[in-house]
Length: 190
Image 1 (tube, rainbow, N blue to C red):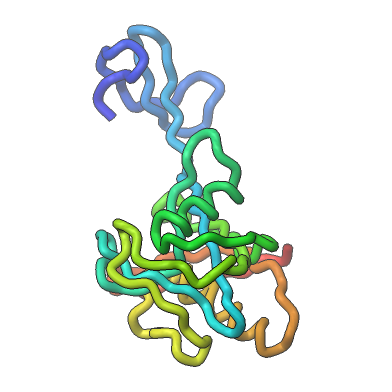
Image 2 (cartoon, rainbow, N blue to C red; image 1 turned 90 degrees about the horizontal axis):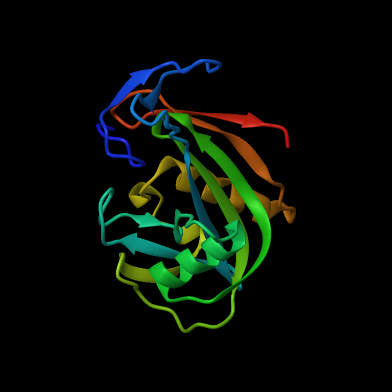
């Protein structure tokens, strides 16, 4: 950040009085600019024994598969955001049933909240951010072509929970270990 969004003056990075970390501060108007994590919301859309996945048409990870999810907008709830993202990416309407996964990704300042949901009908297709949208049986998910570790972990837990017939809320941190894509999952008890 170079300039204050409040008055347009240059900002400096320093620890404001009473704070414990550097923030962008405008010495002209006194505005402190807080930068907080982004919340990503999405769905695990189910139809009978299959899951709806989207093949990404945008970077990052263009061409790989993911669950329909994206950044929350101001003025919407997590449920509204998850349903909106599902409609935008897959042109699919869903009934959301329960939160399923909450994962922190501190290295990229994101928090993922993914909900179990049921497709209301089979009228779906690629939105502007998707190359393809398909229903997959859990054994047919393209595991080697999933876009993000958070999606891989969520679907892995989902497959395990479906087999045992009980769905628990998953809560944890996904920590990137290196640039090669290796990561560590630290689960927390809900």
